[in-house]
Image: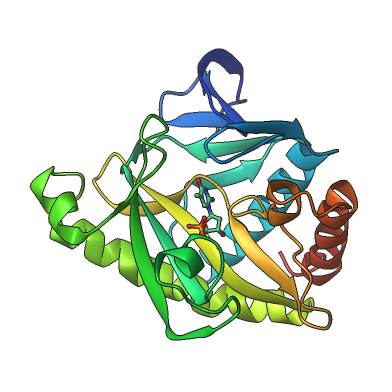
Length: 244
Ligand code: TMP
């Protein structure tokens, strides 16, 4: 591939900035330290989060790729930049839950930590304006947000990711409680995993203490936010170094 050059800004999101490159099929994801919660009603920043999330996402996407799961990841370019394939983002996010936490606890009056076995998959409509509402398949098909075949692929990939990553996190002493995935369609119309996989979009509980090791520390003002991101990074670094 010819040398990649960063070009104009495409879009600045809450945690990342997307840039054009000199090649039309590839874009750059820049990871910021900014942190938001409750649809950006709460704003702050987490020390080094951009570098940590870029590293974690890169390791995870490479690992998933090696197991045959197609992702938009191409390569890590620098501390905070990742080269990805350009995709058309599908406006439906999947949330995979192994245990009850967060919004589902209130919605169905569940006990926090209650196992959801087998894992539960939910769909959310990707819209900052609407605060990413929970949706069902009827909405997805009625509004043509994704086809039944595309949803089938998204569910298949979501379950594969859960199976693989539960083991990865268990190996570093973390319980993968839940996580959110985003998908895109490549130039050939294939559904592939996009966006990121980080402690911003997942719940990771320490297997020994049960403590939250993810963005819930920021959302709920639990303290030791910077240190926790650093700790998750260090555990995963030890696990992945030499493996990917
Ligand atoms: P929830 O319990 O708030 O519905 O969140 C479920 C999972 O999805 C949790 O790991 C955090 C993640 N998530 C995001 O990544 N972005 C969001 O906007 C929300 C609401 C949740």
